[in-house]
Every structure is written in C-alpha cells, then in structure tokens.
Image 1 (cartoon, rainbow, N blue to C red):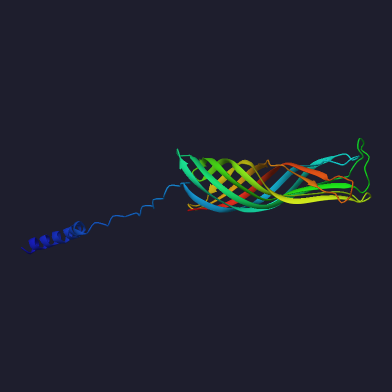
Image 2: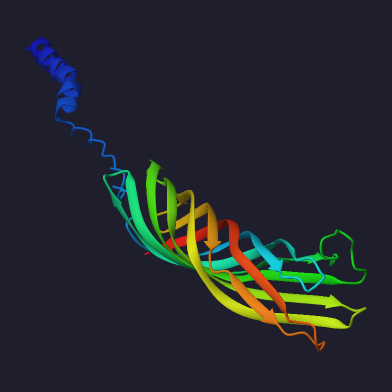
Amino acid sequence: MRKVLFGIAAAALATTPALAADLAPAAAPMYYKAPPVMAPQTWTGFYLGGDIGGAWSHTDGSWGGLAGVNPTSGGENGSSFLGGAHVGYDYQFAPSWVIGVEGDWTWTHAGGSNSQTWTLAGTGTPIPGSATTMNATVDWLASIRGRLGYLITPSVMAYVTGGAAWGGIHYGATASDPAAGYLASTAFNNTSDGFVVGGGLEWAMTTHWSIRAEYLYYRLDSGQSALAPSNVVGIGPSSFGWGHTSVDVARAGLSYKF
C-alpha cells in the first residue's frame, strides 16, 4: 500500500508544472500607436508678405536743341535696391494647378542721367563748356497681377504672372552754355501706367509659410515732355522729352498664408 501511495504522489508532483503553465495568464498583446494623419498640402487661401531685391531701369531722353545747335538724345540707365509688400489669394485645382491674383507695392530709387556736350548745327564740332543733362528716376512701382502656377511637387510651384502696373517717376533736365549765359531747366514728378509680366518659383516650407524667387519686367508707357524757359532774352526755351520707361526686377519674397 505504501508503494502505491508513493507512486500516486510522485505522479501528482510530475504533472503540477504542466498544469501551472496551462493556467498562467496569456501575455498581453503589443499595441502600436498609429502615426498622426497629416492634412494634405493646399495652396488655397489668402496670403501676405514682403519682398527685397534689385531693380534696373532704362528711359530714353531727348533735347530739341537751339538755333545753331544740334539736338541730343540718349539713354538714362540706373539700378537700385528695392523693398515692398504683396497680398493675394490662390486657389488650387485639378489638382496640380494653382490660379490666383496678387497686388503689390515696391519702393525703389532706380534711375540715371545722361549728359552730352552741344555741337554746332550740321557738324560734330563741340561747343566748349556747354551740356544738356537729363535724368529719370523710378521712385516706386505697383501692380495688380494674375498668377498661374503648376505644382512640380506638392510644395513647389512654378508660375507665370502678369497684369497692370504703375510707377512714380521723377524727371529732371538742364541745358546750359556758360559762355553764352544760357540756362534752362525743369524738374517734376509723374505717375505712369503700363504693364508687367514675369514668373518665378515658390516653395511652401510649412502649412503657413512660403518663400519665392521671381523676375518681373515692367514697361511704363506714358512718355513726358517739358518746355523750359531760358534766362536769356531772345533765345528760345528748351524742349525736353522722355520716352517709355522699362524696369527689370529680380526679387525674393516671404509670404504667410492664412
């Protein structure tokens, strides 16, 4: 009997670990947090920003000359730093295209002068000490433009732009011959209108911020003329004239989209 009881006890001890393993709770499953869902990039919305860069201007000027003196003409070229602000609205469609409208105002001081010595009528003989000096300076530019862009990637857009433009231009001119005591001069400001075309690249760095680099060509068509009286009795006034003004602009901009 003792041998039988001992065998039963040994068998029970042998099966206890297996039974404990079967009764142990199952390991908790592993859970992984899903990545946050990112809102899709969109260019639609209002934006505003600032610009800095450079401007290069060109204006043709002419002087009508006097009796016995040849007329003169020449280009007035200059360059300047520029800075300004822009505001606009873009709408993304189709889905890689963006259309929009933008307005801007830019301060600059791009201008130059042209000075030429008088020559005797019908000859190239210079008149010593005489000169006609003319200048034209673009003080500001403004435009209202449409924009059409294509998304190279969801965050990089190449675009073209164009529209109406305006510019504030300062004109000045002097014709003088100290030997004859002759002097005639004029100076005035004018707002000229025209058009602007260009293009650029814009990168949306974040949902709200973007940077751009662009080139714009302005043509301001309103030429100006002035008749300046002389200070010498018996010698007529001087007639000055300016043609259209063209301005090349290269600039970078930073924009915030609402």
